[in-house]
Structure formats: structure tokens, C-alpha cells
Image (cartoon, rainbow, N blue to C red; front, side, top):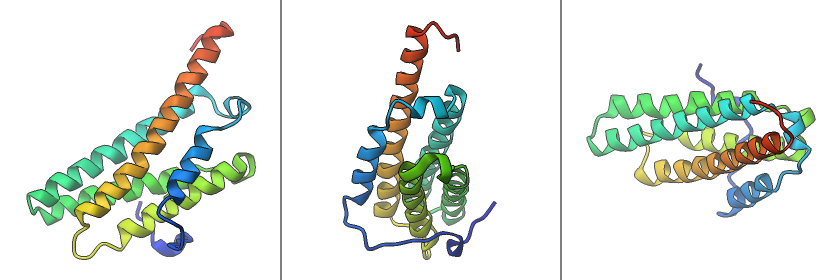
Length: 156
């Protein structure tokens, strides 16, 4: 699935630290979030981040090898994964966290879709840093949910 940038509101007026601020907020989710999201869903989201980060690594390698087609294919894969993450957001139940994740995903899509002719190493690194921070946050949520399930005697 290819998503055009018109489908997303992309606002590039944020400070350099805006993504870090949103990620910090994401890290401090209330414990009630665990009730809204089953462990299996969290693990699927982590797998999507794994795939996006691997695709960015492929894009960086392809860029270093000057393989335009492979680089574009890898960036397209990142776009598809981030678009799916965006489309999976539940803005009604997720509130401000979902809204802020939507802003991050929109930002990433806007940045990666404006590549011409190839994305730069700086762009790949920027997107990888953002996705890696979110990936770590989701892994932390998974760990906390697993610990809570273990303490409560719930089986996985």
C-alpha cells in the first residue's frame, strides 16, 4: 500500500526535540493503557518497528552501494509499515498519545516521501533514531505488561 503525503497532516514547524518530547510522554503512559492493549497487539507493533528499522538499515546499505532501486524499495517498505502504524491508531481510546504518535508517523511519512532522487544518510539516520526510540518504548511497555501478567498469575 502506498500512501500519499496528502493523506497526512505534516507539520515541520516543530523544534528538533519535538519527537523526543512526544516519546518521553509515550514512555510515561498510565497503567490503564495496559488494559486497553493486549500483549499480543503490543508484540505485533514491536514486530512492525523491527521491520521498519531493518528496512532503514537496508536503505542505508543500498545507498552506500549506490543501488538506487534497492534504496527506493527499502524506503517504500518503511513508508508502508509506518502508514500501517498510523492507520492502526485508535484516536478515540488513545487520546493524546495516539494523536502524538500520529504526528510522529505523519512527520516520518512526509520526510521519507520527499526524497529526491535518493534519501540522504542524514534522513535515514533521523528516521531510524525516531523509530528506534519508539521501538524501545514499546519493548518497555511489553516488559511491564509481561511483569504485571506474571505478578497477577495470568498466562501468556
